Structure formats: C-alpha cells, structure tokens
View 1 (cartoon, rainbow, N blue to C red):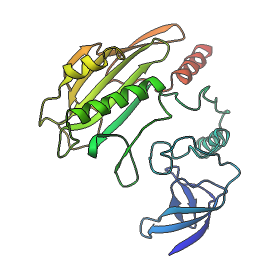
View 2 (cartoon, one colour):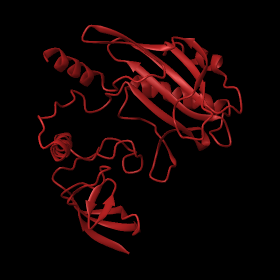
View 3 (cartoon, rainbow, N blue to C red):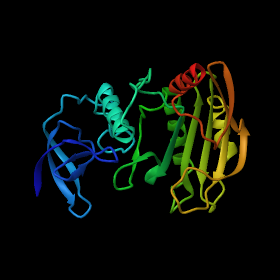
View 4 (cartoon, helix red, strand yellow):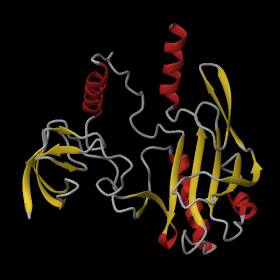
Length: 268
C-alpha cells in the first residue's frame, strides 16, 4: 500500500528520509507518494511527486531514476553543497564553506563500468541490474564515444558478460590537462580477451589499453594485468606538477578540484 511521505532529511547513505523510511531520489522538502518495499529494512520506492522541493531541478540524464550513479542529480548543485556542509557540521561541529567544482557535469577523469547482458555497458540500479548507459554525464564526450566503441566491439565479437561469459568491467581514465586516455578491460579467467584487436580499433582515440583478470567473486574493477598495448599509465598535470598514474592506481577523479586542493596545501 502506498503512503504519502514528507521528506525531512537524508539518511547516512544520501537517500531521502521520512516516516522512518529511506527513499532513493527523494530530497528534503519533497512531498511524495511512496511504496513501502521493506518494512524490516525501512525502505520505500518513490512512486510520484505530490509537491516537489524548491531545491529540485530537472536532471539532464535520461537514465536518472534508474541508474544509481548520480542519485542527487535532481537536486540543485547549491543545495547539494548546503546539505554536505550540514553533514560535516554534524560530525565536526564546524565547516568552512565548501569550494564548488567549476564543472557540475563531465568532470570525472575516471569511470568504472560493468558489462551486462546483451553486450550492455553501464552502471547498476538498486537491484544490481546493469543500466546500459548511452551517455554518462560524469565523463567527457570523448570518453563516452570510446565506451560506445567498446560496446560495439564486444557485441560484434559476441563477448558475453560474467557469469555466462568473461566480461566483467571496463575502466576508462582520461588526462584532462595532458590529453591522453587509457583503458583497462577486466575479465574472468575463463577465456582470452582479444586485446590486440581492440587496440587496433581504438589506438586512434586512446594512448594505451590493458587487459586484467579478476579471480575474485567480488564485484570490483581491479585485477592482475595480463597484457598492455601502448601506455600502461596516465599522464596528468596539476598546477604545473606532472603525475604518472599507473592504470590501476588511485588519483583524484575531479581534476579541477584536485588543483584547488593542491593550491590550499600550497597556501598552508
């Protein structure tokens, strides 16, 4: 049975909270109709907006509401920063104003996607199903184009997704200040990935491509590197400092915000 719920805040996972229930894609100030999906877990599903919060905006991505990648995309960026400041104040009793990102969309220099049924590539919904992402608003148009070409390649070569096939994840990393892009394909160990064929298809658009095997049942985009064509690392520059980033290592994903972080450290 559906309930009318006023959303009073966020829970610890960033889901809207009201009537002791957590609802994804609901925001403080919303009055919604929701279906209770689990009384025990205190989870409900947004059915319709009765009265939207003043902080809402129209999300640009067609996959919003299904894909779990950007649950706050329907919330104005200024409101996102306000709520995040509130979280920091609850934890530490004080918070300097958050420095906003110069770019709200297409800002990430890394994205990790999963392979799914019917040669899909994308992110997961709340039931762990792969949403075939036609255009991700987190990464650049160039990276979107590369992922689309990989999607076409796995379809053409009938490379099925894990568990029935070998395809597990693809990681794309892009140097924003130093223009270069690298790709890491992660598979199971139940077959050989045709890396050289894909390299021949993509070397006009990427600086390097690697193939890794993940032996763990854990759903992670990391493995033992088997082979590389071209670069096995990303080159990026922040505030005049050049970084060599191995394909599977950590690097701040928002390049422009990382430069702000370095400037703050320099000022200290």
